[in-house]
Length: 261
Image (cartoon, rainbow, N blue to C red):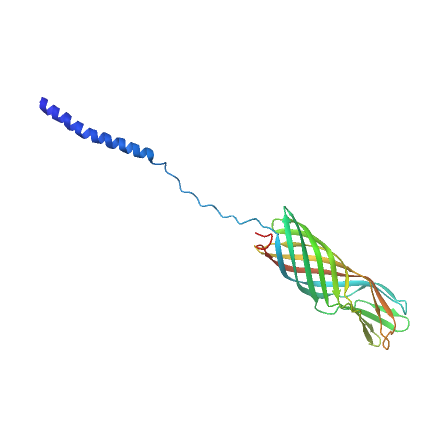
């Protein structure tokens, strides 16, 4: 019995020693393994904030109306606030914006062709020749102005101020009784000052649309009727001439150009 007990003890010792070593090894290895790391959620892509900084170009379309005071030297006619019935205008604009904070400044050039000759609104009654009508014949309008505004996310509320030019500002004088008419030309381009304002909405990453009102105050001009025709030698003067314009347009913004992102 004593021998059997000794044998059993030796067997347990033989088994226990490797088991203890194995347990210690497992504990050591477990200590070296870092704790379980949870999966990392991929970052959510956030597009860069909207900026108005950069160059832009786009088309526009609208209407224009002119108004002026008309006098002549031969009969002493005087008619204030001669209005035309307006005409369609349209071509486009290009410019550059720079945004700092919620403020935007920039410069913009517009060029618009006039689709139809302006129509006369009223006539002038003369003592000896009945009623005449005077029609302005403008062909194009160009402006260059600074822009300044405030932005609220995708909206830009802006004003503008600068100068403008009107091409081929002729007068057509018509006697409505006899149907006789004459066109008096002053071949120089008329110029003046410009003020206006509008609202622009950036509805897509690079695209925006706008609506704008502009007032162009022009210089006074004098037209002399050539000899040999209706009212020969008479001199007509247009005082306080102005052109008012309402336009809608679209712009494509080049964000990756100078100052963009």
